[in-house]
Length: 346
Image 1 (cartoon, rainbow, N blue to C red):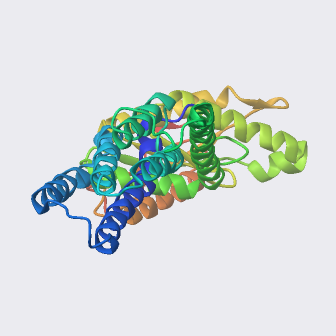
Image 2: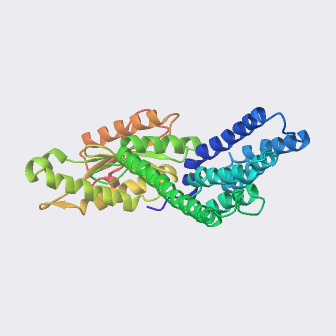
Image 3: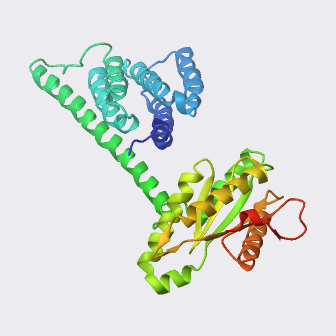
C-alpha cells in the first residue's frame, strides 16, 4: 500500500513539534543553570528566541513541516553552540550535543536525505565546521570511527522509524477497512455509507440527490432452495453490478439482502433511469434456472437524510406490495408513496 506523504507528515507532526518545544525548554534550562562566569549577549539570545517563535508555529502547516523542522534543528543547534562557546569543555559538549541531535532527530523524517541534512547540519554547526577532537592527541581515529558510527546508527534509526510510521498508517487503513467495508461484497457497509452521505451533505447541495433502497426479491427462498453459499454468490453479483453501474455515486450494503445508493446528481430523472437499468441488469443474474429480481424504493432529497431514508424505505415497501421487480419513487411533491408507471414493471 502506497502511503500519501501528507498522511506521513500528519503522523509525525506531533512528535516533531513536541521535540522542538522540548529543545526550546532545555535551552531555557541551560541558560538558567549556566555558570555565573559565563556571559551571554542578551541581544543574541533575544534574536534566537524571536526566530524560533516565528519558525516553530510554521511547522503546524503540513507542507512546511519538513523544511521548517530542518531549519529549526539548525537554529537550535546554533543556540546550544552559542552557549557552549563560553565553556572550557566546548569540544566535549559539541561532540555530545552532535550525538544527541543525530539520535533524537532520526524519527522525524520520512526520507534519509532530509534526516542527514538536519542531523549532519547540526553537527557541523556545533563543531563550528570541524570534528571536535579530544584535548590530548592520540585518539583522533577513535573520534572519526565514533562519528561515522553515530551517523550510520542515525540512518538505521531513521529508516526503522520511517517504516514503523508507515506500517502504523497501513494498519490504521486496514482497521478502517474492516470497520467500514462489507466483508462479503466489498462494498461500504451501512455505517460507512451513512458517514459518506453525511459528509456529502455538508459539502454539497443535496437538492439534486436521491436515495435508493434496493432489496433482492425472494432472497429467503433462494437461500432455502439453493443454499446460503449460492445466496452469497447472488449478493456478490448484485453488488458487482451496482458498483459498475453506479461508480459515480455512493453505494453500500445496508444489511442482509438490502443495498443503499445515494445518486449524487441528476435528480429524480436520473434516479429513475438508473433504477430501470438496475432492474434490467438484475434479471441477467440467474440462480438455477430463474432470474434474480430486485425491488427499489427511491426518495428525493428531503430536509434530513433520515427523512430521505425513511421515505425510500416506505417506497420500497410499496414496490414489494405492488408485485416486486419494479421501482417506486416518492417525489418531493408527493404526500404519499405512489408506484411508478407500468414502464418500470417487469
